[in-house]
Structures are given as structure tokens and as C-alpha cells.
Image 1 (cartoon, chains in turn cyan, brown):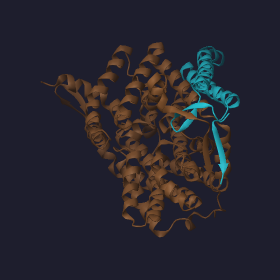
Image 2 (cartoon, one colour):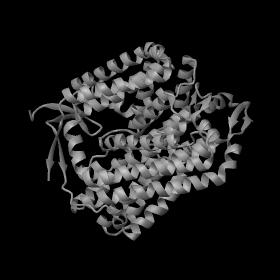
Image 3 (cartoon, helix red, strand yellow):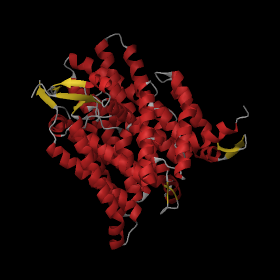
Image 4 (tube, helix red, strand yellow):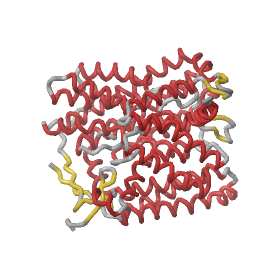
Length: 80
Length: 457
């Protein structure tokens, strides 16, 4: 495991494949939520604009939570 | 203020504080990318702009207090503003002073925010009439120019001259302005949010795309996992007055007052770097210099964020500095359901005293919540974040939010527009242009480009 190759991005080690997966998960859920907003807004009778962005952000955050569970952390913390 | 709004102020401040403690500790969370989209979401969702400001002030308190925690404990910045503190922290850590700078940083944050609020609110009250003068327009070369534009122009030129690469920074001002106005003309509307998020993620996108290049890729390759050493912390007293020495308190107070006003037109990260470096060099003893610089930088971080938001918001009504044009930008945007900008709504619907009281309440609550949490659990929180949150998930979240807002601004074309804005920004950043220059160009472009076109040469 110690021989795995990662890339350093903003001071963190990342796997490009897993970064792609995380981006895809968050983006897809965000865009689905975003595009569902107008029909939900119709249903409850509010403005769609605000709801689209809000739901999209919630979707992206759900994607973040899912990615956190399925992607391995590339840090090894030693307590000194 | 009725009891219902007071209750809302309290609840929003607590929620914002808890969220931004987490975001603050997370490594690599950019301020603009994390503060602006949430403020924008709340505004678009129809929340009263005054309550969004309350949320924002509490988030500054919590974020700028928490982002230096991983610096003190592991040498890893929790946000862009904490980057200048890293060299100080490394020196302090070599001498076993990690827990000393940790608590000094937390206490200095409180000093910075409170001093900046008092100074910005008092100053804003007295210079309010200047705002009307600054908002008036003159006709220059046949172009209508608001007077605050000159303030922005001077600010961006100064910022360009202090960039690592002055030459490129200066010529990028009109060049990048043309990119923004060109895209806006194609979109047929004055897009703002996706452009500034494009600038924000510019450096990350540039590095990321460099990794796809076979030859460039090699310089980014790392073997094995990233090792993080987390230092032990002794028990810390809850009394903030015991933590700072008289010298640290004096410097924190004076520099917070000065930088909160300067942040109206100057870059917060630039000021944090500049003042901290001056203080560090002023001490013969390397360790004492580092501790003093680290402490005062923590105060300046809060102070510049507060001043850079409140003075442009209350007095000028236009984003004249990198803070107002960056993290606080949503307040200067126009919203259909309000029929005006969020900033105008705040100053026309609330009297000055109410604004002052709400800002103080949100700061007080933020610190009452954040201070004990950070003093008691900073190490446990940092450990949990480092062990459980993969960087990929966080970067994926950023990119998703930028994609969504780009689509919201101009559909599929908006996404490609943001990609080119981020690549241009990332390349210029790599060449040594401060991102603050690009934020300021974004604000000044609608006036700058017509002036450029009207030049008689």
C-alpha cells in the first residue's frame, strides 16, 4: 500500500481517478436536484430560482457525504 | 427588533458558527468558494439580507478562528488566509510551542474581530455622506463612470504592483477585463458569480489539467500516503485575557484597527502577509518574532474580513476591495424578488442602530460557541477531519458547486465560459499574479472596457 502513486494538489495527495468519481457523484446529484426544483417549486408554490440553487447545493453536499464514505483518506496521522 | 427576529439571529449565528468551524479546520477550503455560494444560496432562497449578513459575520468569526488550528497542530493551512501563518508556526513548533500559538491565535481572533467591528461601524457612521459622493457618476471620454471606480482602479494597480510578477499583473488588468466583458456580451447578461468562482478554482484547475499532460505530470507524483504529524496539546485556560501578553494585545489591537480600514480597497491576504512579516523581522529573537507574527496575523485575518465587508457594504455600496468583490460579493448583487441589491435592502430597511446591534449579537454568539469548542476540542476535531475527510470529496464538492452555478448563469455555454476563466486565472496565478487582482478586474471591467475602447489612441 505504501507504494501507491498519488498526485499532490493544493498540499493534499489525491488519486485522479477518485477525484473524478467524487466530482461526478457531487455534480450529478447537484444537477438532478437543481433540475427538479422547478416542479417542486410549482408543487409548494414558491420561486424556482432560489430553490434550484439551494437544492443543487444540498445535492452537492450529499455527494460530498457519499464520497467521504467510499473514498480512502490519503493521509496517515501520527500523534507526537 | 421583535423577539422572533432576535431568535432567528441567534439560531443562524449558532448554525453558521458550527458549520464554519468544520469548514475552517478542513484543509484547503478556499474562503470565496465556501462563503460566497452559501450566502448567495440564502439570498436567492428569499432570506432577509440582514439575516444573511448576520450569518456571514458569524461565519467570519468562526472560519478565521478555526483555519489556523491545523496550522498550529500540523503546519497545514485550513484556508488561504492561514497560509502566511505556516512559516511562523513551523518555527514555533520546532521549539515545542504548538499549544502556545494555538491559544494565542484563538484569542487574537476575538480581539481582531471586535476591534474591527467597532472601528468599521464607527468610521462608516461618520463617513456615510462620502458614500453618496462616491456613488455619483461623471462622464469621462463619453463613458459614464461612478466615482468609486477610481478607488477600485487605484486598488487594483497597487495590488498588481505588489504581485510577485508586476509586469504580467499590470498587463493582465485590461486583458482579463476584455475576457470578462467579451463573455458577458456573448451571454447577453452581466454574469458575476460563475466568473469569480472560476477565478477562485483557477489555480486548482490549472494544476489539475497540468497533471493530464504526460511530461508535466511527473512533478506532481508522490509515493505513498501523506504523513501528518499532529502535536500534543496541554490543557488550555478558558480565560482569553490570560493568553495574550501586553505586547501581543497592543499590536493585535492597533493592526486590526488599521487593516480593517485598509481592507476597504486592499487584499486581506496581502495585509496579513505584509504586517506579519514586518513584525517578525522587528524581533531579534527568531522564536519570539514568529509567535508575535502568528498571533497578530490571526487578529488581522478577522479584522480585514470584517472591515473589507462592512465599509464597502455600509458606506460605498460597491465592492471596492478584494474581500467585498470576493467572499462578500453576493451582498452587492441585484435580486429580482428584492428589486434592488441585498446591500441596498439592508441600508434602506434597517436603521443603523439595528444593524450595529445585530452584528454585535452575531459576533458575540459566534465566539461564545466557537471559543470553548476550539479551546477544548481543537485537537480531537483536527484528528477527526484529517482521518475521515478525503481531499477528493472536498474538491469534488467545490467543482460541482461551480459547475451548477455556471449552468445557472448561462446554461452549457456558462460551464465552458467558467472553464476558460479558471484556466486564464490559474495560468496568471502560476505566473505570479495575485488572485485579488483578478477579482478587482471583474468588478471594474464593465467601466474599464468602455474606457479602453474610448481612448483616443
